[in-house]
Every structure is written in structure tokens, then in C-alpha cells.
Amino acid sequence: MDIPALQARLRRFSDERGWEPFQTPKNLAMAMVVEAAELLEIFQWMSPEDSTRVADDAERQTHLGEEIADVLVYLVQIADRAGIDIEAAVDRKIGLNAVKYPPQ
Image 1 (cartoon, one colour):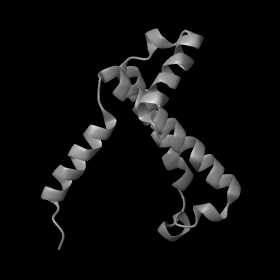
Image 2 (tube, helix red, strand yellow; image 1 turned 30 degrees about the vertical axis):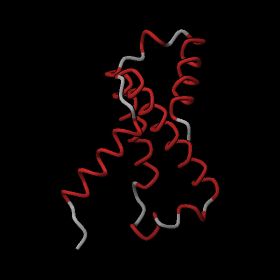
Image 3 (cartoon, helix red, strand yellow; image 1 turned 180 degrees about the vertical axis):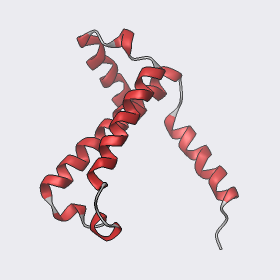
Image 4 (tube, rainbow, N blue to C red; image 1 turned 90 degrees about the vertical axis):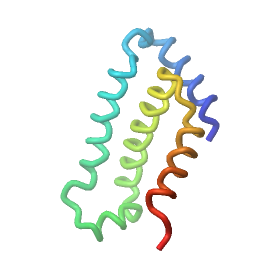
């Protein structure tokens, strides 16, 4: 996935709709949390075992993909507005986690 291209696409999408003034990092983070709750709702009453079989139900899998996309879109927009290089941030965090949680 080309994150900078996605960010540019999302900026154009927002500009075309006049949403830019409302898409502050704070507002985007709040919207992302709402979408994350909708993602969680899919699994709300499933057993852990049932959750591993979500791909067996095409309708549920489609819904899951839509909610994952919503969360990702908001996350990408937050990073864009805040000047965060997502790839660099992820690389750094994986490195920090490798130190914090060394292999057994």
C-alpha cells in the first residue's frame, strides 16, 4: 500500500466535499474510536473460537473489511494532519517492541 498516495487521495476526497476544516487530528481521532467500536461490535458476542472463523461468513467478512477500512482511513488521515511518517513510526515501534519483548 502506498501510504502517501492514499493520504493524497483522502485529502482530495475531503477537499471535494468541504470537510477539510473539520478534519483536525482531534476530530479524526474521535471518529476513529467510534469506528473502532463498530469493529469491536462485530465480535461482541462471539467466543474466541468463533472469532477465528469470521472469514467463513462472507457477509460478516465484508462488514469486517469495511470497519477495518474505516479505522485505517482515519488513522492515515490523523498521521497526515500531524506530519507523522507512518512507515518510519511503525519501523521505530517494532524496534522498540523487539527490545522490550525479546524472543524467549
